[in-house]
Image (cartoon, rainbow, N blue to C red; front, side, top):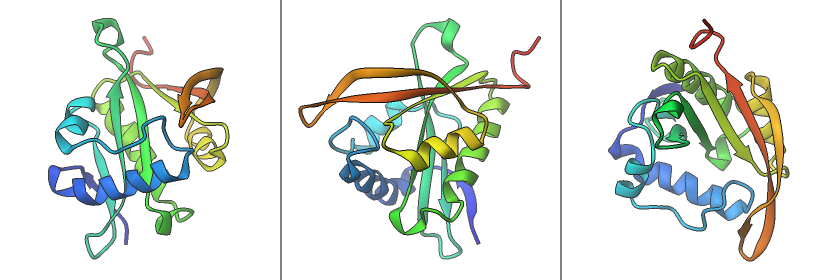
Length: 165
């Protein structure tokens, strides 16, 4: 049975291992190494941090939001991160994490969620699109990973309940 719960510091070692496995694919992020817990904690919003665990308590994936800007006008806009353990991919873990993250973000007043995804990461693109994200742009040569210019697809999801009036 899958349980979605708040992400706490105690989950970091398992979440870091999942993140590092994502880094190893070369299609998850421009980062080349996992941060310390302190750096990760500082770089993510204090709300809407989630882990998915199985009935033994093993962490199968995590999701969190990063601020997109320090400017107050963007206070309701967050950058999505979703990572799933290799052995748990294709089993709905990412979908449950992202769906719960969307609900948590809206409960916190977030009106827009965005994601920058490598075009080669088809499963992540499909997951986001299935949960209401739409492509708003294609960023060519936006950054280098291991010395190679990479593109990203920029997706966003506008809340249907926050900021609609």
